[in-house]
Length: 97
Image (tube, rainbow, N blue to C red; front, side, top):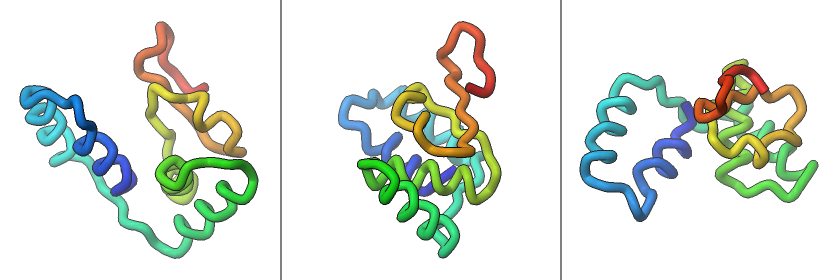
């Protein structure tokens, strides 16, 4: 996952101590990817195509660069990104959107 995802998840201002502990356990097992030239180049292209926030552009670019599905509740924020595979785990029938 993108390093930006960790920042977003752990930096959420309403996170409870129990949620934080659960997330830290999950994140300890996750593969975290730093920004590299390919991710940066893709993020720039995403931002040039549409007014996408920096964090979302980096997250989407990371998924594209590594050919990973992007797991998010906010699929509408990413639908415009060509080639990006989205999974909403909170959907009634989760699967690639």
